[in-house]
Length: 102
Image 1 (spheres, rainbow, N blue to C red):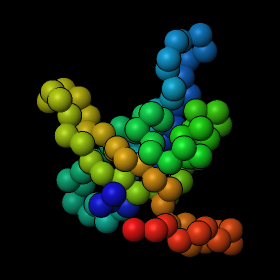
Image 2: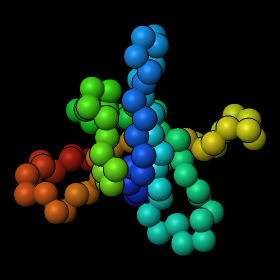
Image 3: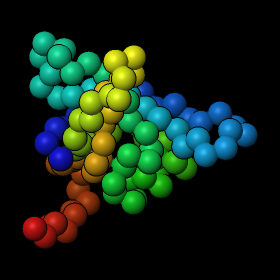
Image 4: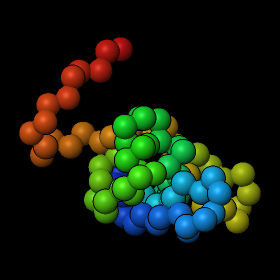
């Protein structure tokens, strides 16, 4: 993933809605001039299985750091999407993660 950002708002699915997995908005870091705006993030766009199940069960906290690619919308009425989402480099957390191989 080429971009870094953070979750700015998470919305839980409405109870009783089938195959609705919750969604949120993402702010791109270093987006000084606001060219990217808010991106849509669907739980199913999260590549990392741990993060995906966390999003579906507990939701993602505001400020959660993520890495992602940006997918242009199919139509001009839709928002751009954050896809291929992985956990961000949260250097503040003491839980060391294993290095990802190639």
